Length: 384
Image (cartoon, rainbow, N blue to C red; front, top):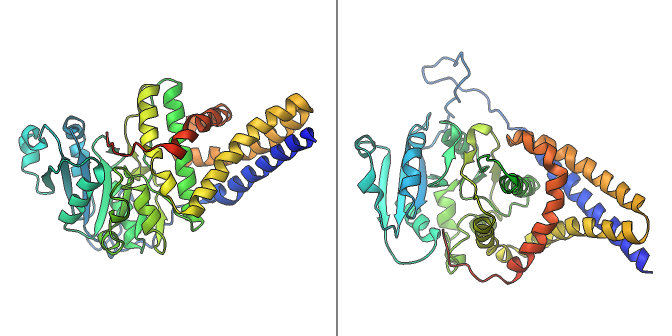
């Protein structure tokens, strides 16, 4: 009887995993960025070099919003990349929230004279990025809002143009990819893998018509959407959630698009210690239990089946026959490796392909460590 239970748990978990990979995640593997019909270039001629994106015929100006709290030293070396964004009109709003050091005081003379740059100091004593972001959205002059963080660096000067082009084409929300920079060590590999796996989930679900989150380091939406859905009022009592909870609530009946052109990736440095990363992930997990119920059920089923595939396989191998465990593992891992290799290449993480089997197994420990935090964490009143 017990042996039969182990077998069915292992088989069931493996089948559910195959369903997620073949029904949902395969969508991102086969996804191709659509190339719109080429409009005339600015001078009325076609661009012979094809090195720069064409201006969209209905291109709208963009408000790039960066919220910082005592991160001026991180932002200043990155300002030139933001200010060099090309191919359409924009403004860069930097919202300094409850900072003891004003970014205005350490700007270079050239930055002070930049017409695109607007600096706003916001002191309200409240904890959380979303209050600063709400102020930035209120002050934004343009319809398209493009959000990122002070420690982030766009991969190219075409980041803004290509993210905003999706809204020009009819999207209300654009989900971008925000990877971490590569560094030596197992922690960095796992952080980058976990970031890619999270992107695989929320982008694949969006392609399947079930958008549930975005990442505030690289996210675009319209100001009219923000206003019509009430902004952050539904979850203003929680410091975090300015990105995922907003998308989870606002994307219900809206057109959501993804953007995986490498020019639009936004990089930031990863945590360098397990303790600091653990604190960061705990803060991120504080919002998951507020997702819509069907999103929670799907994500819970995904995590549970992943865990039971390994745990059930170990039990089957010990109590019955390891050949069954090996067979189930090979079937699932063949699918996971094939699809994840394609996706990781698209996400500019080709080196991680060789680590997929080990990092995938390590995810079981990840689930065990963070499951209690997802269920019972109440520490939501922190930003950084």
